[in-house]
Image (cartoon, rainbow, N blue to C red; front, side, top):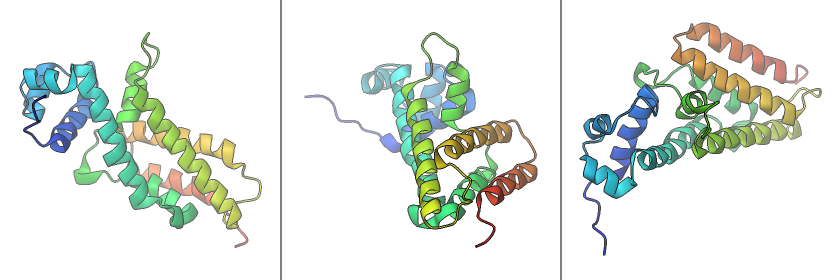
Length: 195
């Protein structure tokens, strides 16, 4: 029978997640993970196998607690096109003024072009966003909110590129007010003008 974990796993995964968001995967050592999580290296290896295992667990935690929560808070199904707009605007207003960036975006950039390619969490997160955008745009079409010329499938790809680009620019310290104007202009272009 294996040992039970004697720590708050959500807290450990949150701390590891933020460490990877700030430093990237390659920039994080086991020593840094010991310091940020409060676990000793033996506990990290016993619980997660290695740094890669902890990264995968922290990535899944990010999808569940950051991305899924952001979607639920800002773009629930009932919110329509206005909810999607609110989701995009929320990117300019990180809690506590932090700019750790998106673990999906950061990892796509860090691992892109490498032999191993991006971790599985990148594809999971991007697919989740793409499906969300397509679903909300199709619902907006059915509700008569969407401009007739807008193709939900093509536009969802454009929104995914805008979403990821915004995250990069926010992390780089770009003027958030200008980015918010860009978001509002993009969504104004999607909405039907004769409603």
